[in-house]
Image 1: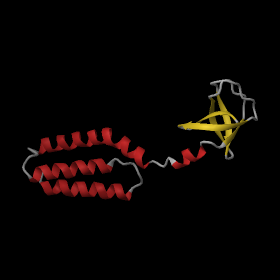
Image 2: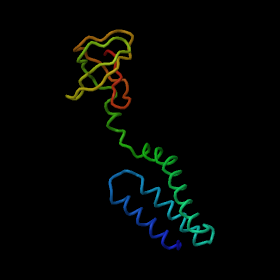
Image 3: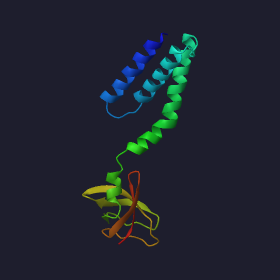
Image 4: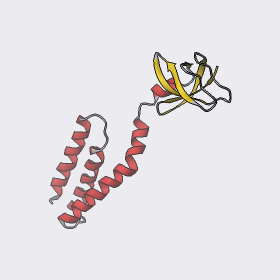
Length: 140
């Protein structure tokens, strides 16, 4: 494949990434196409079948290795961080290390009691941290 076609493909994929909401897949495929285009322009990319193989390998490697780190850096963690330290109210009795439900900001959340004492239903608790969609709570 001609080097300039790889460059066009890469630019098209980058434009697609910008135009669509945050999947961060086309970005890595676009960069891989640009790399293959640059190598092809220097005569280092080999025959077309090898260029496609190189494109696929670079794309998959970039998605697997770089996407999680990039998403972690740009993910909106402020909302979760703002919940830490707030007061939640248990909706059910929670034994030590037990899992149940607690209300926070008018919504029911999955909650885990991280204290060594049981929590009664209706007891006020402090959010110690958040893991996924589970609040880790202890008594106030």
